[in-house]
Image 1 (cartoon, rainbow, N blue to C red):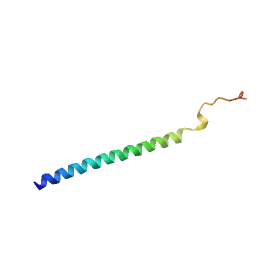
Image 2: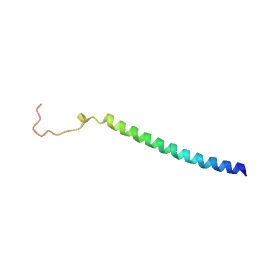
Image 3: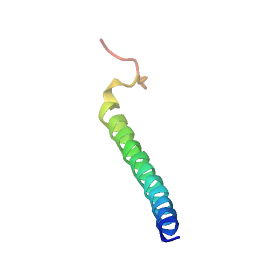
Image 4: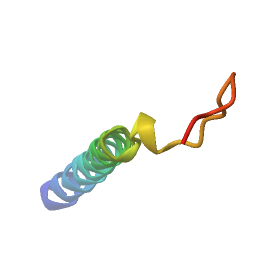
Length: 56
């Protein structure tokens, strides 16, 4: 009886910890995606149109 109770508690806590770790890793990956976008989005690389005729 005691073993079944302990097993159920371990299973519930293990499932909760797994969900928390998954959520944490998901947020970390989102942060890395944002940092990657910031790092590689150079404002001078975007195509911009001149308001007046561009001189070569």
